[in-house]
Length: 468
Image (cartoon, rainbow, N blue to C red; front, side, top):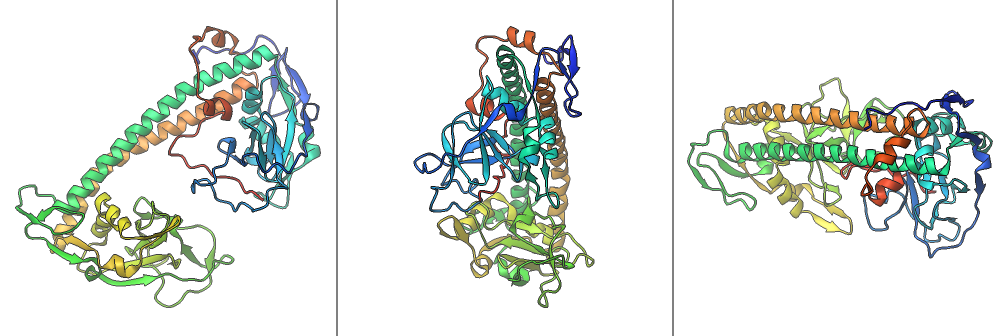
């Protein structure tokens, strides 16, 4: 059905280089004719709303730590009231698409713009104003000293041309896009499930190799380790600290300016790797705190879900890197393979046990180096066997990682296609009236899909814009 969509029979000039030609029967109106500024305040009984680039306006959770990136003031009496259907815009992030239609009555930051939006179908207004061409329009209407500090200009915004099909056509567009989005979202979720299964398979391979080795025929013995059962008979059980040449806390210096020494934080540890920052650094660091290739870093303080995560630094002598004080550097003794150690410390069973040993206070967990170093681990005493385990894992993991990469590329293409489809439909490049009329009556999408435009995958993080 999507592949058979065709343009409208007749077009006219819109007067906008981003919109180009638009259907002849559609109105083109300046945004100022469709909005009225709202200034209602002092309704602290209403829920707190916020705006995210990824999903528009949403009810902000006061308990979900994944959403609450900004401090909420005690006094909310100055917050603006946004009624259901109002247009809410973060004026400092409008050029990135940080706007949307309020899904319910609520209150928003006083730094946001709130407008009554006079359009027949608010879901169409949501799709239109958050589409790629309109993000470009809001970018043109924003200015400032540099990108990242642009502010939305009211005069410029008021001149943005808005496409207004008939109410019936607005409803048909929303109906079709909800249907198409549902199909694309199911395809993305199916691929995400396959990725999750492949990652589980990879973790099983790693766990099996670091706890049993690669030779399934060797005799086993009880390990005596709380998180592990049997291990190969010739392996040893020793405290983690005995495998290390040193353990060091990072620097407490705050990053200022663009010094040559980059500073790693807990956000730079991902999937067992250290992803170096590209900006911000120190001019100098205390002696001994520069990282060397194959140093390991673990999060000693973080959320309970992330504390204990380990990353391997793969830089060389030319990469001047240090690390923040809430990370601990583990330098493995020369007779052991640091990559083997990284696999072991990131294996599901060990990491789960390490997390259980952390001290939790509110939403923060702490795992000090002494407690961490006392944890016992299974050790193939011969370096050659450690090397063999690493080679075995890398060989099997490479095939899985290749499959995951292909699936992620397919997901990226589906998202790109969805963005383009929405833009083409809401700006009249494609006529969906007949296609919408042929959709079955049972066609329905959940409220989130209908209200937010392009959906956000369950495992895709949402960055909430600043609440001032």
